[in-house]
Amino acid sequence: MSLDMMHYDSIEREFSRRRSRGLKLTESRRAEVHNAHPDIRAIDEAISSVSVEEATSRLFNNKDTESGDFHRRIDELSKARAELLVKYGYGADYLDPVYQCPRCKDTGFYRGARCSCYNRALAELLYNDSGLSKVLDSENFDTLSFRYHSPGFIDSTTGKSAREFYEQAVTTSKAFVDKFGESYNNLLFYGKTGTGKTFLTNCIAKALMDRGHSVIYAGAHDFFRKLADERFSSEKSGPFTRVIRECDLLIIDDLGSEMTNSFVSSELFALLNERNLKQRSIIISTNLEFGKIASVYSERTFSRILNNFVLIKLVGDDIRVQKQYDTTSKEII
Image 1 (cartoon, rainbow, N blue to C red):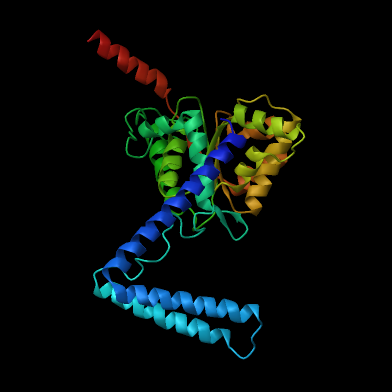
Image 2 (image 1 turned 180 degrees about the horizontal axis):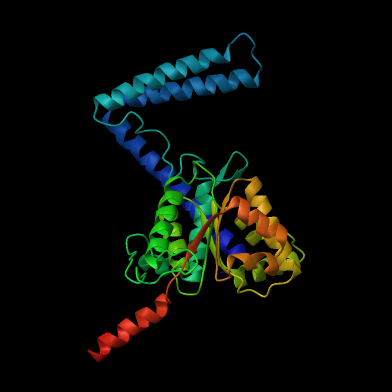
């Protein structure tokens, strides 16, 4: 999972292409309508004339002319044009500028910050680089199955079956997606290897990306290595740091697989704090027993997770082993 100036250059070029396509489409529509309907062309020429008149008035600071008068005249002309467009079978906004993202008008920035469409473009580049885009084709809510979570596997601590744990985890995951952006929540999936934690995080990632949210996924080992690379370089807050701060959802998979040290512990705590203050969600999956998080990282990190995360436990036999057994059985048959 890499992120460098090539990614940003690629995105800038893409946004430039979007603006160019939108401008060409707008100009094509205007030429089409003007050629077919001279009365609409006349209105557009009148709008341009009033706009020039207003600009000239401002240039020479003509206090005798109210700016509101210009706006009123333009509004009246625009209304007349919209009525004619509808009369001739077009939409009322057919001649309005065309943008793929009306929010930022295809600039990539909105109110002084990166627009969600820009962050989504970054996330998609990262997914493509990591190969996760292919994974999401097969690991999503549409392909989800309860086949490998046995109702006969009983957790000795709770008395609940692996199937019951997984059904509850799926329900919680879908609720997280449905309420995303309306309420602030974080999820922690924990349990032994092969119980379906990563699969569910991928399901959530796919569902939210399909809805237009920017999602960044990182395995814990690569995540903290990339952070360290930027922290100990001349650029303390590089592009990777910025994008994990700004994305709508950050997923850290397999926490505990990294080389844990004081740097990792402090960065994890700082990240939890910062995203909590900004009300930006995190999903963490780990093979660690929940109680061991405090000893591996710190009591304060454990406290943040305990108070700010929905805890989702998964149990059962290793799904990978079960799938391998199924494959072997089919080959024998």
